[in-house]
Structures are given as C-alpha cells and as structure tokens.
Length: 328
Image (cartoon, rainbow, N blue to C red; front, top):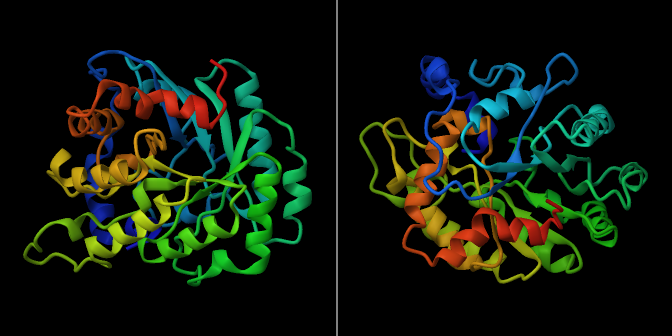
C-alpha cells in the first residue's frame, strides 16, 4: 500500500483520530545526548495559502496547518536544524510554495536551513521553472511524489522525465525518489541513466513493515515480499549517486509497535548504503500517523545503538552537512 492510500484508509483514520490530541502534545523528552540532529525531511504547510489535494479525506490529525511554531513545539528540547521537504501542493502552486519557504528561511527565525521544492519533472515548462532557482544555495533539490495510485509503472523512465532529472544534476540539484516499493527497480534504472544527478531515496523505499514478520490474524497481506524489497534496495544502493534517507517508516507502525518493527527495514538500508550515504529524516507531521517525532528519534537511537559512534554522528548530521552543503 502506498503512503497516500495508507493515509486514506478507514482503519488508520479511526486510529489517528483517537490519538490526535495525544500525538500533538509537546515533547517531554529530548534525545539522550543533546547532539545536533539535521532533519532532512521537514514538512510545513499553511492551508490558508496552499492547496494540498491529497489531504482530502485524510485523518483529522493531518488535515490542518503545520507551521514553524508547531515544529518548534514538536522538537522542544532537541538540538535540531531542518531541511524543508515539499508537500505535494497543487502543481500550479509550485512557484508559490518555493517562494513561501525561501521567505521563511531568509527570515532567520526558523530552524529551517534549506529546501527541497516541488516540481513537475516531465513538464515542458520544468526547465524554465527550475531555471529560476539556478545558483540559489537555499534550494538543494526537487521532489515529485511518484507513489500515487494514478502514477503508472515506469513513469520515471519516460524520456521527458529523464531529461528533467538530468537537468537537475546539471544545476547541482538533487532529486528525491518517493516511490512505491514495487517500483524501486525503476529508481535504480533512473539513477543509472542520470549519473551526474544526486538522488535521495525517501522513507527507506516505502517498505511494507508486515512483510518482515509472520502474518497476523485478520491482517491485510503485504503488497510485496521483504526479499523483493531488499533486492531492490541493494540494486539502488549500488549506484554511488544515490543516498538513502532513513525516514517515514514510523508512519506505518502498527498500534503498539516498537523499534523491533522498524529495525529490519532501517538496518537493511543502513547496511546497503553504508555509513557515508545515509541521512536522517523526521517526516513530521506525517510521522504522527504512527507515532510522535520523539518516538521516532528514540526508536532510531535504539536501532543504531550498537553501531560505531562515528557512524551514528554521520547519520544524525554529518552526512547531511556534506550532501546538502549546509552552512551552520
């Protein structure tokens, strides 16, 4: 099940609605050591200014505005800086979204340091659109969500799409891969066809967490096997122009789940990409579908606790500083 379909499911809507008040409460506990975290996947949206078509019918917990003040509350006690991630606005609002986040960053009142903006990669107007931001050190890349049910298989391999992604590389920008797990082999092919473009694989490739454990009574069958997902992740990770973003998986965490439910996917990605090509992403506020941001931080710290301290620091902030050319 893709993330947008997951968001719209009746069962999850009921679960998220009952937890809305609890999950929106400010955090009470910070990560143990207080060291710097760079969140490479921060969402912000203002529904008085922006149109987010995918919010129609989603759980109440997401169908509201999320501002910098809300993010500060969600990260209270955490030493965090963030990179904004586009929020899948209506295509005609891409420029407005970019201008909105640039204004916020330049205000210096926000923990947000830079942005990955939205764009319609295969559009004939894409070159003119992205050309407006050429040389802008605050715009690090572009994302176009590809995991929607209406996106056909192989869409990212069409000539116009490849051309747009190649253009990003020529302008020193990255492209975020946000895809259905069953389409991940297309991501590997795209990375091969655009060797001069840096890619970021979002959300550990959107694995179905149920595929890593025995089926439970009454549970929906996984959309893919864990072995299929692992093979695709390995194929993508072979391309040195791709980094893996450890993000998003908590949104699919079942009620009562814990770090052990997330560990198989997280650990495979960490091992496949290696310590120098992974970054952390909070995916707030979408993460609230499975747990608050502090839970995600705590679970991830548990999962990586036995890894070398130097590798943990790379995941939390050092790799982001390097890959996104961040100036602190």
